[in-house]
Image (tube, rainbow, N blue to C red):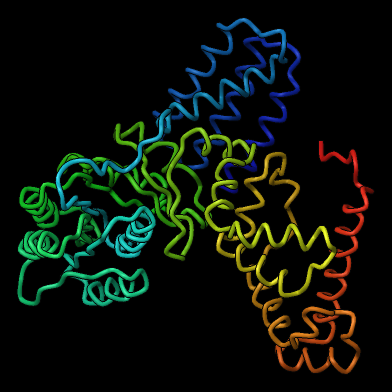
Length: 437
């Protein structure tokens, strides 16, 4: 997420931190570089101009605190301004009001509305909401079937009606929800390749008939400034309540996230950060600013861990580690929990102090998890619990069974032995006083 933007800003921020004295000349020089980086990231030029002017005014007009250097203070001002343009405060989904509560998804075709409907359903289902997905996109032939597949995966019903127009389908879905005790209805409306009067009139009619509590504009985060311009066009027609940026796990330049709130005045509610239906993150302006500046996001990392780590298994694992009884079965369980937290490269970047420059040349292929799982699954119960018995012939059998090579099996066994040795040393207190600082 924002890899190129973060890489370039890290270089500029490093220079700024080295400033021992704040002058008009060195501030102007540093901020010219920041402005260039923002424009290259496809940030709206008016937003970039306002951002730079505000940072400069605060940097030159503020007394330097004795506890920090001038360069550090400028970085803090840049951080605060990034938070400001992205919204300052969190803006959660508004689920107040009558039942059923209606969430209407809007946006251009291809922005990811149908998949997002499933992700929001997953998110709300975890909060004990009952969900109905509504197939209101009858323009795209595969849209209804796609929503049905998504709904089956999430485990929620879909409302469809053959021969009805989208307004009638949405209106009747509310009656269905009331009759069946469903408290949340998500409308998957049609998109177009461009904004047109027919599309917007249809959305306005749906809005009048269903009175949604939330109207979310779904924007493709990969499109940058185009997403911002489309959002403005939609806003002129329909007063949406919030924004969701999709495809943020790709090589998004960051322009949409840094511009769309200030241009539209509407908050970003969620980021879609992967293909899985649980890969939806609540948007926090301060955490996003921290990520963009390469400072990590430990709060989100901890939240992901709390959500995906089985506490009972964690306690059992702790006892096993104390007894030095860690096995491949335990290792396999830990792999599953890490996989559920999201792509490995994204998780590592959330760790404070891990800079993008440190990760250059390193590959984080999540497919390697599949290879490791295959090797472990090809072991017998005894081999998983007592890896020391795995001799040459067993290694060949495991390699054949997992579709890997003997070298792959040897590498995994070597890594596992190193892990066991490290844990044994930790139990003996050999790492006492060790610090990562």
